[in-house]
Length: 272
Ligand code: KIV
Image (spheres, rainbow, N blue to C red):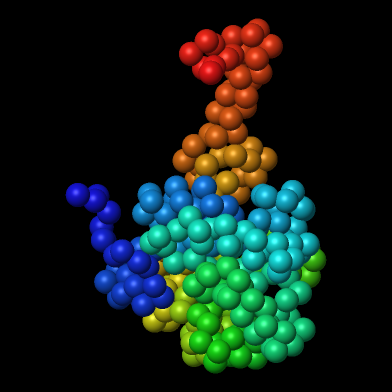
């Protein structure tokens, strides 16, 4: 018997709406490859985001800007192969939806068709409204992303908390309402004051998923490599580490190296 609170065999955008309606929180993590996606899917995660954070954690870039559409499709295809239950959402990478809405739709179609994912995520509000509307009109579910939007890092100049001032907070609320009206099925709010996230969550009917946005939202998302403790350098306040994989992997590799050098590995029973 599963210990999970629900036994939904396949999570859809509709399931997430049901979760919000009955007050059940949504658990979302990123994944970028088949193996990790399979593990977290079997463990009961509701939503898997193939985030453009792959640019940082998989490829070692300083920002999310360099990752390409082809690379995102590669990651998304690998993730989809490992997933049976979770809803798989894929980030449209920087430069594939901002220039014009037709290009945005073409990018979203490529992701859906080539990877088999279930939805796309775009960063931004009113400035990309036309792109969002065009993608939604084609029947592709869209998740919004407001607050700290890492694809605009060179505009902000910093990864610090967004929308602390009244004007930016009001703009964020307006953008969130616009996204809901346009037909987005959920919105990620990144690194904004908890009070503002709570207000957005109470104002909107669609699920609000936070990262560094406090507890009064409908769900939480973290980058899987961060919550597993693979990266010692990245320690924002909102990050809870559930493992210290960096140390564990390091210990394992040291032990293996020692065993090979000492000719302790392989033993007779480990040979043919
Ligand atoms: O790319 C990503 O991992 C994200 C999450 C931080 C929400 O957008």
